[in-house]
Image (cartoon, rainbow, N blue to C red):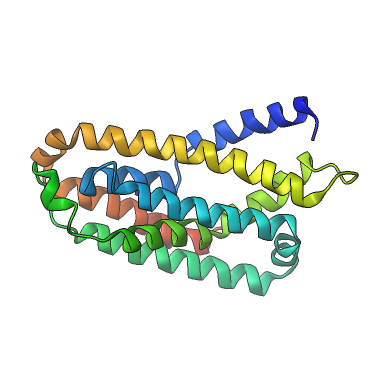
Length: 203
């Protein structure tokens, strides 16, 4: 991959990662509820999911989904249902405590990792976006496997950095969030549920 092509891709990845999405919202929420260190499990799960999605797109599954209304519809409903379920879990979470040690034991690392991974994997918009976005940076004369690792590693590294900053920011203002109690949980949970409900209905 040429350097100028990679730099263009890097700028595009930064813009994409800075735009609001389910994984960034999840990192923000988990950072406040469980602390920035524990949220690393969430971020790692999201990174795994993004690696898988990018691999699927580059190796042909994205084209299959785009050509099949049935598969697209199924993925939309699965993704929407998961986000609604995740929103309900966040809504019902105990209010943020000023004592970080209390919250860090409410959820184990595997649960956070799984939520992060499923949040990225079950979002069909991510699959469709990458299936249209990535081919613009592919050189058919070069190894697809090597390009996959370059493209996937670049995006995932930026995404992890952004989500880590969000989690750290949420952790730093947790004492303010404590004052709003369940309102923060219900706001974030409500956003997840709205996104999940709207996802299958969009064309």
